[in-house]
Image (tube, rainbow, N blue to C red):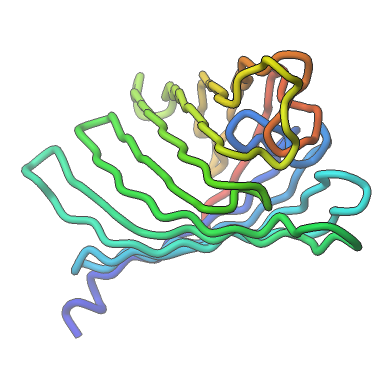
Length: 219
């Protein structure tokens, strides 16, 4: 019972001007409404999920879900390591391979820095892929905070093969600021990738640099 009392459940509902996943839009540039829930146990076990509307193409449009579970352990007062799995579920296309896939990850945190490396054998219905990311947050005061993200995706066989001669790796980035007002969190981010000629890994054709506005409310 003491462990159950100390467990933490948190969640939020968010509205975003664009659902960007690793720099690429999953709503064709349209807004997204999302709900997320997280559970953290004192033993180090954590799990959670997120539900969002998506529109990867006219044939794959509707609700998608992300579920994850893992284990984390401290490495001192300011650092920790973690490992787990993430599963992504998307609307079923009428033909061709689906977009569903599962990743395994390992990661580490130190103070306001966090990093993860993911691996899957079927990235959005394609071949093997490795994704590495580095994230940072910095609180300016009790209301304002800054965030930054840098990621690299390496694919063996992309779902949408790039034109001959173009590389299969992709860098994505994000930089943002957020403010908490009356129980809501307002955010503004610049998100993008270094993809050339709209060679997006998922094939949406929308991985250009853009601004994303968000508003969320915890529950």
